Image 1 (cartoon, rainbow, N blue to C red):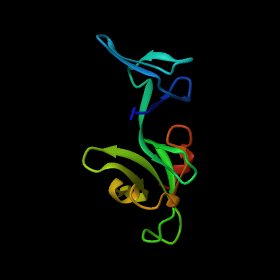
Image 2: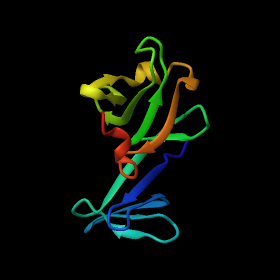
Image 3: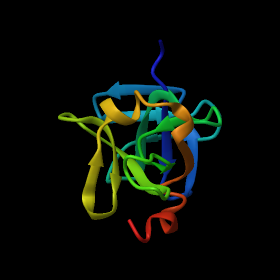
Image 4: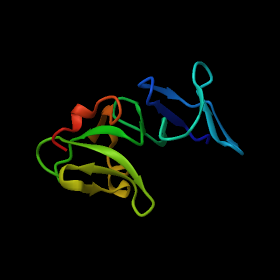
Length: 130
């Protein structure tokens, strides 16, 4: 399986899928195969890796995505959190108060329990309470 990566271009404030990554002597260059090609420097591009998992609507879930979960064992109401990767826990959903919902739990449950509703770069207002 080929790994999917997307990028948020901070200056342009646009999200694109990455077509190629080049590891060069001067740094890392990324291209989206269409319009954007740039060296990554000073935080000008944020790369996000796909989890390989899709939500209830068939939308692929990436790092930085904001998810709405409905899981009775967490609470009777829907919860909103964002996806973050850590070497210790894998892809975890971070909720209010920095509570973690580890990948081993959310990725193995029925996919109808979660839905991508945005991402931390384009929709930060969705996380105001988180």
